[in-house]
Image (cartoon, rainbow, N blue to C red; front, side, top):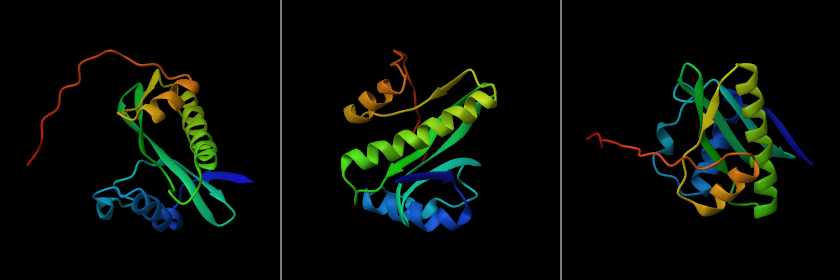
Length: 132
């Protein structure tokens, strides 16, 4: 059975392990100081399944941040773990009286799962500047 809990310092190594399993770049830069204060991790026994955070980006909006699942589990368990994490983040967003939560992805699988959770695509132009 999956268990979701608030993310604590003791989970940081587990987060790094999940990020490594998905071959994310720059994971050594992720520390408790760089992570948002609101976060959850889903566990199956002692093994991490998924984790994610809620980062405020405007007074009334936040974005889902550092959402990751372990590559060592099948898609069904990862999907359930991510859903538990996201649902808890959305509950916190509501309790903070946020107007909305943003998420960014170019992955169609993630986009479809997000739609199942009530997210919808917003056709807006996003501009960015690479910092070197």
